[in-house]
Image (tube, rainbow, N blue to C red; front, side, top):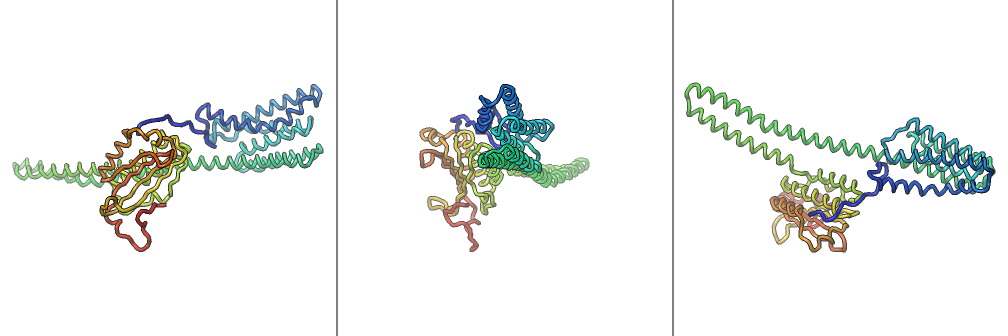
Length: 418
């Protein structure tokens, strides 16, 4: 497909540092929404205290906000890469001290600061200390509120809000850590898969070339001896054998390299999941799609792999879609032909279908159609039946063994692999 639109700007993801100023602004806006609870202590600074206490209140509020914003900003900018350090300890301790001092010296409206302190504790304290830290902060809030004679209903509401906020942040940080570990595991799996492929190629080349090169070496030595003995006809025969062996070795190497470069359907499915997830596109694809398929030859699987790669690339780059559906459908061959076929279907809900409704296919689909034709396959691509969406269907023939159905439950004609 030709490029028809710019990639959309993705929303910031949880636990991932913002990639640009826009994402940073979005995260800051979400953080500033919760500043609404500061209306209680701020309102207490207007006409309720003398000059000294009012100045004290403003200074404490400024110190509290600077500590809180610095903690949250460091967490947002550096994501999960940030670790507990002395700066965290100082900022959190200052927030806790300011919340106590203002609640004692000014008014119980300042108990609201404990809510932010509980959230900050849940966000930055190390694993194992976050939950106890939140409980200590909320317990201090309740104790000071009871000592000040705060209304029990209002105090319970503030304490519950601080506790739930701190616990939610603790759970969120655990989720962020888990997501980071999953990303690392995914990268490790990809690296191991690449390493396995390199080992496979090295093993295949060793098996293919080891015997051939050894045979060529022996025949070359034999040819040299025949030449020294002036047995030219026998030497000429050995040279002909060397030529045949070298040509066959070249064919074997080309076949091995061709198999190495041919995409595997299971690998492309895993790559598609990674690409769509990274683009914030919901993927609807059963895990069973990666299962081996009897009768699917190497050339046919490679053609479907290229089709999946091209289709998913265009969904991510050009469609503006929010959902992508991937299916493998096994059915009888069309037009009355014998045998069965396997169809890869990739459908999205983006705007690419509307844009291409009256335009020809781009180079990507043209090249893909040619690849499928080499495997006796066909390509059908175009707008979905609704107002939005684009559908790519790549069909390849299955080899005869799939026609033999066992009684244990192979897919029936026209069924979709779920």
